Length: 409
Ligand code: RNT
Ligand code: ZN
Image 1 (cartoon, protein in one colour):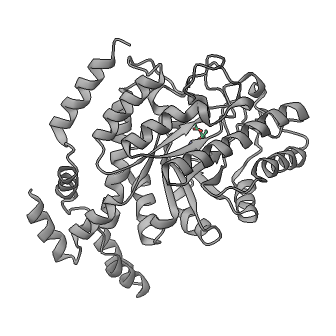
Image 2: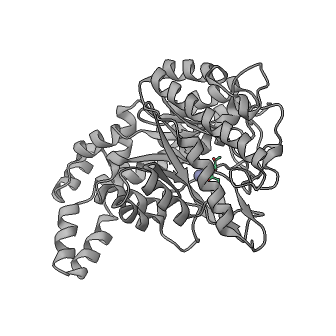
Image 3: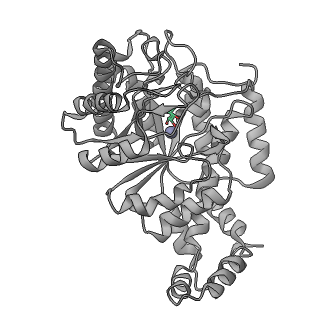
């Protein structure tokens, strides 16, 4: 079906497809650098990711250098309609120096910023509190040893300075998201002490006022090796973000598998001005599978649109699958987030609200099910065409060709 006929069909429902496409054009997604290399990073001193997160698989083509990662990202962005951002982690420094995490400064990331400026990308940032000998106990900012805490506090402070400089250089604030792996494999005796130490460390990291960056904190339920207690739990960070005026990062893999993260958005948004998302797909655990256009993602998009949260939610992605083409994973996952947003923007919200407020749940159900038959694919294809990106077989051919070109790495 062509766009004009799809447009007419949506119009029958009172939905303006051009307005939806214009809105979608404005939504920037922060694409995570770590899908490109299985969360390995470019430090010569670090090993595998650790901290309870793990990329599994051995597909050929992993980016081994900043130049390879940037080339892969350029290919991915060229196949994702719209203008987006890159989410960089501190372990992705681009330098001939060998700075430890407490020695990092802006210069170690200047090449990334020059490239981002060239590409027209905003940059977000993250301190890296894992994959380091001083994180081997799965304790960093909450470690009982003051020396270890001080090392990580210095790392956190430096990343805020780096993020602030990045934000100033690129003219768009950089979100610096703090996630620590801290927790205990078995039942701890003193959770309060660990959480108090985490809070004090965070306070020290965040004490310097900054204006070209924003702070976010990311909670988690459990990780491999920290099954009994995660120090930075949801309640911990929700309260912290409210009291300290930071963004709260909600990662879709960081809750009980039957919890709906979509349901949390409106609840959290009543208490916090801004939210950061790590859109991900947990399978049995925080497995970080590539996001599909599935019910969970659609529900997230629906909430963002229906609760009018798009202007105060920063959409970041967090998945890493090393069993498939890493560039295809980026392209497919990011486009799925956009497709979900498009479906949400193509919904007759007034009609649905009216039925709900009348307690006419039959009409609401009839509507939501009938809407599933509308030709979203044709509107998406139009969006891609307007942005000079492909769909269907031509897209698959390009993804395959690029993968073949990197598979001898
Ligand atoms: C880990 C968190 C965190 C990481 C990245 C690499 O469980 O989700 O966001 O995935 O920082
Ligand atoms: Zn995350």
